[in-house]
Length: 102
Image 1 (cartoon, one colour):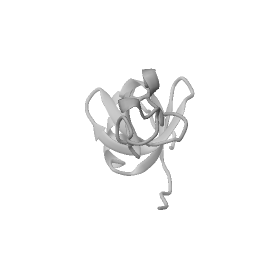
Image 2: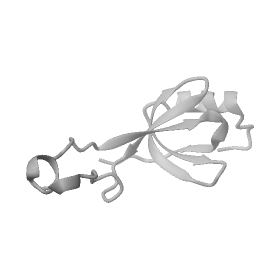
Image 3: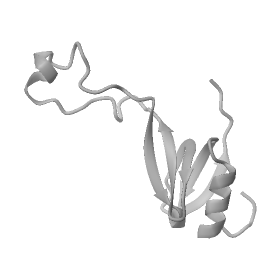
């Protein structure tokens, strides 16, 4: 982004301009998240983050899993391609548009 102030109102405007686009979001604590902007309100922005294998791919299944399959067979819950993360607008430091290839 250019040298413009990125306050709460400015962050909301920029997030609304990039609605339904693939972006890289950086917060004040230094973390970076890439995903699709799906919702913006006065307090927060919701980002649909792509599914990463190993991060969300397993559920805790005590006693051998659902129905005694031991984690094999039918899954306990359907897998998703995206999961939602919510960030407060006050925590945003930068937002930049990324190329999206499929």
